[in-house]
Amino acid sequence: MEQIASIFTEFPEKFGIPRQSGIVEELEGKIIFEPPYRSKEAVRGLEEFSHIWLIWEFSANEEKPFSPTVRPPRLGGNTRVGVFASRSPFRPNRLGLSSVKLKRVDWDAPEAPILYVSGADLMNGTPIFDIKPYVEADVHSDAAFGFTQKVDFAQLEVSIEKPLADKMGQKLPALRKVLANKPIPAYQNDPARVYGMAFAGKEIKFQIADNRLTVIDIIP
Image 1 (tube, rainbow, N blue to C red):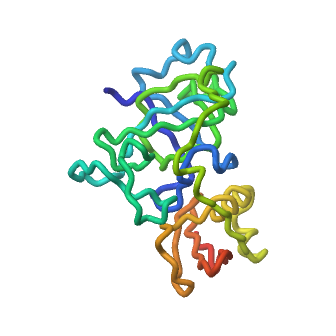
Image 2 (cartoon, rainbow, N blue to C red):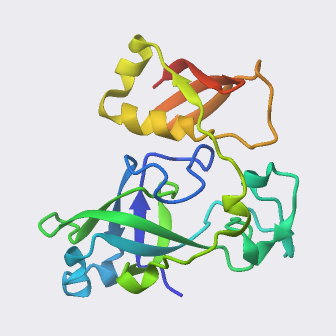
Image 3 (cartoon, rainbow, N blue to C red):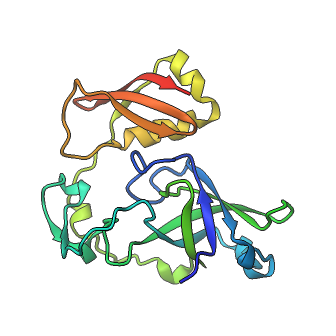
């Protein structure tokens, strides 16, 4: 397979990225095609669709031997399920699949066409292997969601004092929602620990106690 594009997002590192696409719709990204595929003809008609599928690579993963089972964070990080019954990044071919909202297509930029999307769960610079439109047949009203619908995934209460919140500007709503979705492994539960997450050119320092996340500093 050949890389056709890259996506550029607010996450320079894996830590803190939402566990699924669409959870934080406020997260925006742009997709820029590699020169061989930078063709307006290649995306002609895509602007008529509201959502698209991205097929991409877990490019930051370390090489590991194949394991038939993984420990999904949503199950607390201790219970194992089959790798093909999970969305784990540790897969035989390191391929990811995300459904994102297509906000607009920029036809006039020097690197056009550029796709602007929201709700992406990808790290900055992630290689894209393919793009497909999200169509009506992809929606299944009778779908069952396995262990994911059996787990209560309550959001955290997020506290950010105004002087810190002001540092984020227009990125604040996206940051709040990312933090509310508990961007740490489920098995970690140390209220004294200070976590650091890179987001939108800032280092976000925070602590979690009970069901409350408190931002203690935001550093450029």
